[in-house]
Amino acid sequence: MDGSLASTIAFCKRCLYPSTKPDLFFEGGVCSACRAYDRRKQTDWPARKRELEILLERGRNGSGYDCIVPSSGGKDSHWQVLTLIAMGARPLVVTAATCHLTPIGRANIDNLARYATTIEVTPNRRARAALNRIGLKWVGDISYPEHAAIFGIPFKVACDLGIPLIFYGECPQEAYGGPPGADEAREMTLRWVQEYGGLNGLRLSDCVGEDGVTEADTRDYLVSAERVKAAGVTAYFLGQFYEWDSRRNASVAKAAGMRWMLPCGANWWEFENLDNAQTGLHDHMMYRKFGFGRMVAQLSVDIRAGVIARAEAVEIARAGDGAFPETYAGVPLDETLAAIGITRADLFREMDRHTNPKLFDRESGGLARRFELC
Image 1 (cartoon, rainbow, N blue to C red):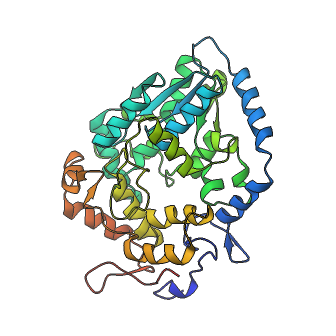
Image 2 (cartoon, one colour):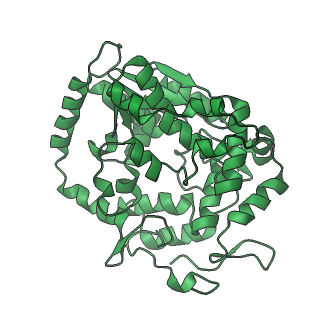
């Protein structure tokens, strides 16, 4: 492979996904995300719903709640909670506080709390900021502690309160592409978290002693597999029991009072990822690592659903995908950086270190992608 990856990149014939997307597979020029979407037509969804009803019945316990829904207050959280309530369940909403909560994120968390009891868990902010800096420096992911919190804290609360059922949203490998067979997973195990949870191979124990992080600081995010097993806690993807539809979820959430806004010019949807002001930087690093950003991902979902034609989506993505987030969900970049104690110079130094030189040309002094979406 030479200095440019352009000659080796394949694009899905159906959506916009490039072959640089991790864990994506192609068959006959069509990516695994599109293949999984096609298989939904053969799924017996009424039978899946009956399975869900059985799970809910078995999960009855003495806590006063039938299950936990990990939540950011977004469209999917709203839909999950309202769907489970309509089935006769009483969910407990558990929100692992995000790295930098936006005003609209705060409003949406409060809105969902009108429908279900909500517990918000906020890990130590000093340690959280250090983990942001470590994640950015070591693996090019400013959102590292967010991922750790999302997948750790709901399990801890479930064990503490004796609630054996957790329902996350979609199975990412089914909705967005993954290795063969991974799209069939209904249960979200701790092994799944380690492999697919966005931790980039970085363990919390690796962070101890770095930037003032102590072993005690990491306990907010950790729960042992032994404790989870002893408590009988199991997590499932609700999207494996109901066909996942992001636009339907957004419509239901908006009708229930959720607020929307386009978070930045690198996004296509107005109704996703509105809670964390750091998300724009996380998405921009995805663009720098893999050559595509949030806009391509969202447009690809809409192409599969028949919302937009591929040719039109290509033109939209060429104009906006990967745009730098000077402001995200109403929060200026400098405010986001100041909150975790880094400067623009720090940010760009680390972003440049993790930018894939086979995908981007920096000789001109800017960030120029070496290939064209097609």
